[in-house]
Picture 1 (tube, protein in one colour):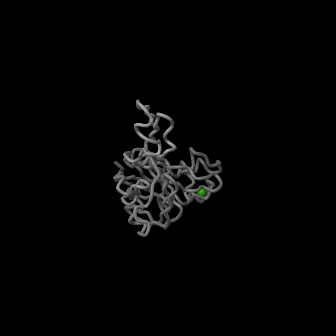
Picture 2 (cartoon, helix red, strand yellow):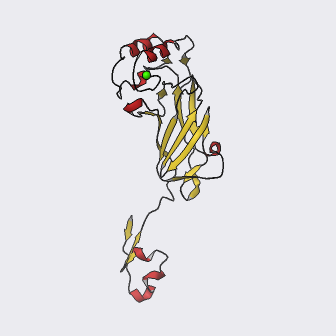
Picture 3 (cartoon, rainbow, N blue to C red):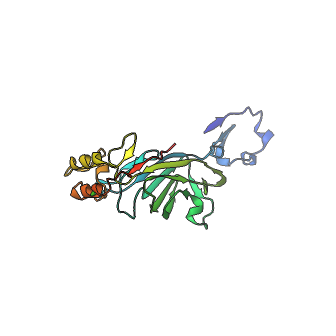
Length: 225
Ligand SMILES: [Ca+2]
């Protein structure tokens, strides 16, 4: 908010307050209050995260640029819900168009798209494993200004079964040892990746799941920029 107090020689010079091209509510005596709008702020993504629900523990966030190693099933690998928050309220440029016109994803399908204020939530299925996953927002604009869009792209590295991270993403005996050592532990922000099948518990089912994914080819070479 910017408040200007111009020198006004006489109220009669400018006529009544309502003659200004501003809301009369913004005029008080010899003062005009200008409310700075968001018209000149370029749209940008403030934060984008991937979420999966781990039973009663909840839905810990994995930020973009990170890695998504969890898997729910062979048909539901990688991110399943991505929530992106922008620096201002947003809208779909073409509400009647398909979701694929709003956002561009590098693999999989969009099962749902919702907007609430400055936040966009995407439900996704069938993300390709052992690959980067990117999402762009060509059909999303600032609310009230369809021309104000962003060229940003978010990126995840997707490798089902990966539970330990590291410079090179790979599913190997480190995952097996990691999960075996966490069996029976309550899920926390520090160990939720060991809950591979996202059922809210870390048990032998997760161990069996990772054992079936240990493979010399279970390495992901591509990385996010
Ligand atoms: Ca589990």
